[in-house]
Image (tube, rainbow, N blue to C red):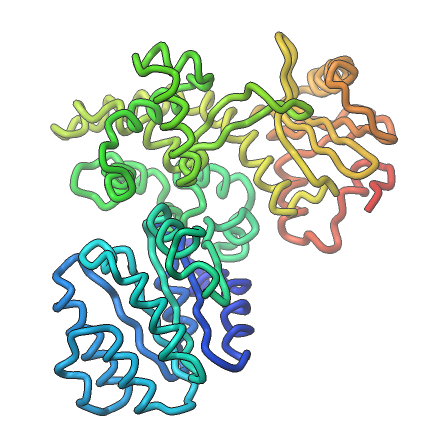
Length: 468
């Protein structure tokens, strides 16, 4: 049985950032944000271990009820009863500073957007508290939230009362492929099989560790936690998600160009553009522009879990709502090889971006023009890497043919570097004879790279020295 090695998983960079700020003297205002279930609360609780502090979870109850929670937590922290009659944040923090003096104390306020929703003046109150009350103190204030739009609007944008006050900021992102490997001990293929359905969000991926098929069935079962998760997240961020749901459903099905999306949804061009921009700002979609160009492009859903959900779950709600899971499972299995082929390109791109598959490139993206396309192109200082990616087991002759065709397409890209490298990454193959500027990687090779990235360099495959 596969289990996670530890409950708190691979947020070491984030912890080190917090510890570094904690060692600095004087008051701190740290903003931590990221999508729900990304691991913000676990990070804060791990950071609080063995430290003097209070963790406060805000709710959508009345402001008075939230103040009672603040007062109770401050009372537990100090052992004093001065906070019981508090009705304002200012009074609570003034009293706290009087009681603790110069002691280093952490106050972590989680899901701040809930408090702002019941009391819009909270950011202004916190500005006044930080400017006047916390000056000269050693309070380490953490403001945390899941609503990315509200956190950026209320805390980070220029118009926010708290703009310029933060002393640190960290947006939590999904686990990298390397994080998942280190945390689970899995090899590349089982990681990819799970990642292509559940992505790198900890709360989603962990459910697939022991039994991916059972986790997928739960995803298709009404009442289970992930069954309507994307709907809940979109409703939290957007007032009227209907048009956004339409767009996401079409993008997941393979409709990726704005003009076609406009035609199918019946929305006018301005609205489609605005909705896509909003989805992009919230991190749900991204626009992929062919490398070397500034216009055009195609849209895709950024998170693999959302992509899977909008491709297979949302369009089949009429079956799933009445418990007819088997027809949907049958459809998924019939479509799965095609889906994996699409996601395997994304998986390799993710490995390159995070540096696990280190090609020494500063930029990587797809390239296409008319009938020609290349799965991935990476551009470094003095070199470019051109890669075809296949979720297939290939014969030796097929692998050779793919590389030869790749070489024919490269002059049409307009990319001119001192060194060009041509590669194929596939599930498995008998490797053909290769020139010094060619490489072929299989899943087995990726396992070696993932398990020992420091001692297993790409130069061993390429037979040429990639410039640093």
